[in-house]
Length: 442
Image 1 (spheres, rainbow, N blue to C red):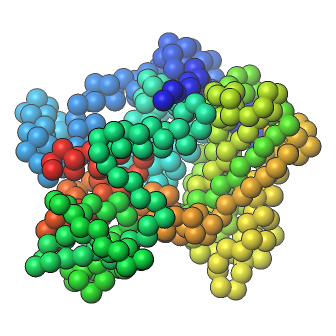
Image 2: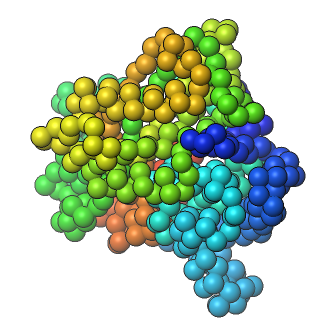
């Protein structure tokens, strides 16, 4: 397994052509951001430096088992060092929304635009509590580790995990739909497949699914009543819209260094992200969606023929149920559901934004494939309404309260049955945190 890197993990490009690029060199970032707005580079250093200084507490809470002695010890020790008021002040500061942080910290709209879209990748919006802290953590991580991709494609990551599992004696079954969880005397003892086959568990049944699946069809009438009621109140976030492009040539971005950026955001800025988030939350197709542009060919030339390029686009502010179009140009279906025609029309809107930045873009397109939130859910039943984060990640559905207010680590109300995945702490991502935490416990 090999990873490909770039020295410029992220950047932003605004409609007026103003742009910024973040590198993995802090000194270079300080100089570059100070050149955009005097003092903003120094303020960036303060922000990521603050993450470094508080890394023990932050990453302990973000990635640890919260209902545990180690976490209690961590909080007690930190509270002793800071004092009760100091700890309370730190936690209160962590709740500041990204808008509050960015408006009060940076002078440049372009630098605000550099960070505002990143909260979307955590399933949050810039007005959500805790989004400012998450954005700072992401800024620190990008600067420290970059944004690597797997050489040859993500399939190689899956192949590596498959080899590791088989090497350790594990068995992998694909195309084997689980219809229900088998119980005996109040304990989970296995699963029953849609084919009728029963697979028995020696120790535990571990489900990486949403609450909707676990306490719905998998447990059926055996699901604890309290969990069924909590599932009915569980909220899913905005849908995700994706577009994949094969291009005849690499895109000619108007800003220096943008062609080497791993993930580039196209947005008017902080207000643009807020506007699109609000529109999607109200069931509207955003007039100017935030476009996240992945450039795999810039990191891994093996992904496409020499001289060609591929782009992976993500539009994180898509409505699950469509009530209308914020631009007043597209007709919402009577039933509110995504259709193939609407998907392509909305992809045209995103493509027009790309074309406004890249000279000759439309002529360079070899192929385009768009995926609406409905398409994504059809591909993966856990992407409810096209939400890739396993449920809204607002503070009331995070940490101790993910997925439910009464959740305790990854336990369920049934012995031998555990719940992991994006719908549980530590939330969405490719780090496998929930499974790692449970494996350590078991």
